[in-house]
Image 1 (tube, rainbow, N blue to C red):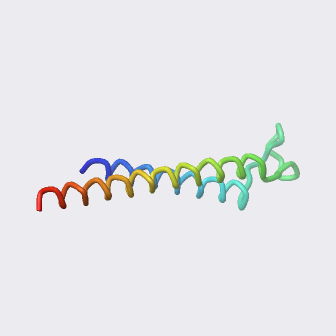
Image 2: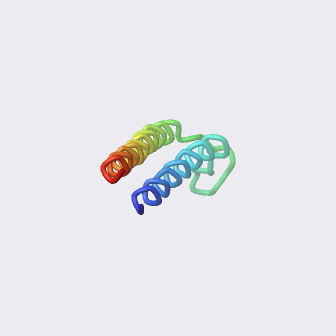
Image 3: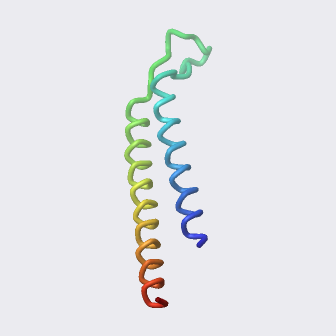
Amino acid sequence: MRVFSIASAGLEAQAARLDGAARSIAKPRPTGADGSKASVEPDYVGAAVTRSSASAGYRANLQVMRAADDMLGTLVNLIA
């Protein structure tokens, strides 16, 4: 079923977003106009929003996989 591969790709995408948020805190980019290291500050708010959004997307994709699994199980039971 394509639903599992689509949901799996969604899980991978959300994991990549979480990784990106973690990296932005661990190794922030210079924010100064001249690129000076003195103006480097992590974007905690942006990372928190990304984390929250990615977490909700991850849960939604898991729910899709559970629903597809339930439907597949019902279909197998009907055929058997």
